[in-house]
Length: 65
Image: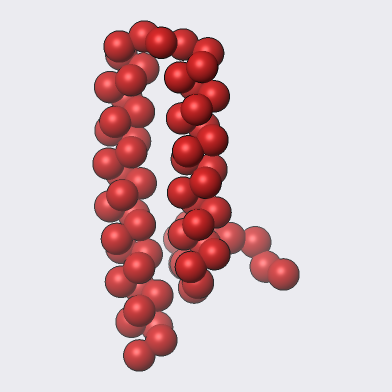
């Protein structure tokens, strides 16, 4: 079994691994701190993760067509 790849996603498992890692990281950070600045930074990181997910889906779809 190969490790998930962020720069060259080849399957939905890569996307799932990144999304689960992000959700776990966000949960831990929000449990440790409840500061407004941290929440704003997590929103920016969340937007980046959503954009990466859309890019990864398009890349995977183009590889399989």
